[in-house]
Image (cartoon, rainbow, N blue to C red):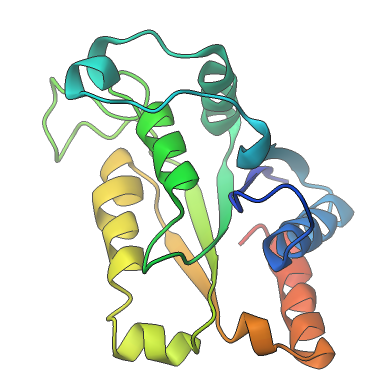
Length: 193
């Protein structure tokens, strides 16, 4: 059995969104299969923005981020769920990972970019919801933000394999389409994939 960390990155905590339901479905499937599940809801975590490279490399790690790093470090598999906003992850999600994936925790500045990944041995599933069709995001936009995350962020610090679930047309999803994706998330959770 695996230890799974689910990071729900929808910034709006005022009402439930599809991202919340997808994270819940994944957690239900994983727990039902006997996996240990931890969760982080980024909208509930208070942390400052980083404003310089020096602060990111040498600044004090906020308590909420240190707790999140503990969860990330303990996970064998991580799931990140967020909506596509302006072609990429919401600012809250980006700010969280700028804080959490610091040198000394996620990568070593002394070993260089090819040997410095400190989070090896962990797999990742990125779940992105979007208003446009997923095929349009892949074909027209080249899934550029997903590629950047896979290579420049998560691949850089050692996550492998990195898989993605792209859920398009969310504003127009009928009940059947939504239920299909929730069922798929439960299956993925049970498989820790």
